[in-house]
Length: 407
Image (cartoon, rainbow, N blue to C red; front, side, top):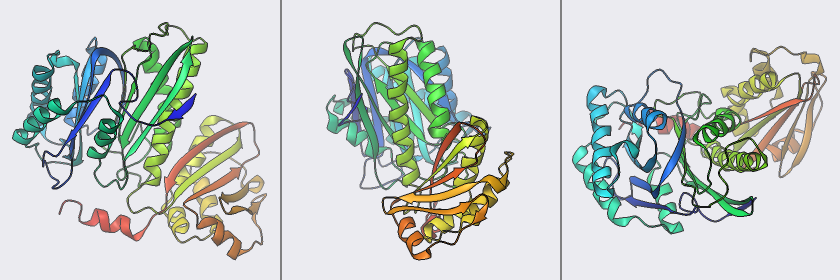
């Protein structure tokens, strides 16, 4: 497997487009479309929040019941959540308009929305946007990049990735784009993510691979502890790579799943690093745990701790906050056996040995914690399991961004 340039249009047969529909934002693109003329097998995972946006409900039905998917339409600005029957009807109108223009079945169109909760979509601008998107669809890499930019809300950077790998002598490509900056907490995938591939794979195995990958990627990130109403991760596979269809868990399946993991892990880390107001990616590794479940509980508790996140922002090696978070995680461990160290591009420093805080250079620790990516490694000395979670620091700007998000 190798990383290549591109995103959702890197795989064969996928086109994309972006337009400025002025749904909420001015002077920027805010709608995107992904399209494959060849019908796609689709897999998806969605928010576990009981309050689900209309597009989530629409896409859950399509992924579960439709024989194929051709297109995805995404808008930024309004989430189409808490909008009742009207919001559901607007999803249908989006699908109908797209289906009419592309001459595809209505139930082969996915829709997604992100932004402010509670506002109805301006369907005149949405429909005009769909018409404009239809006229701009292209399979070039720039169109995929523009689509990744169009779905941003409070994101500061676009998020895309593509890889190539060989499956039974055929070159297969997987590409993706995502958005996510706030209302990010591990509980499915707390963001929007769209992955395309030209691999030939059965729907059942694609869904299984995605479900497993999500657990160790999107489910392991947190910015602010809030699980969104609109979380959606969809993978579309059109089979144009002409590899022998993957219908069993063989070597090709494992290679495909590994590449799918890399794509989604990369997108997940990009979201964590771009948390609202963030200045640093905060990675937490728990090693030598008794079980994977224990390691997950411990790492997620630390990465979600507001006190720890604030310390990372202040470049303060306040390791007691990490021990505290581990202690209330719900996982059982012996705190008197825990070792803890911080690492970054500036070096590494041990701060706890067998549960006791060491004497260490605060100046050196501050230097290490001042990098754009910081890792805390906790060794609980109980077994061979491990887990990694990703988050970001908690800054003044997070409050500023969210204090007046609607206004």
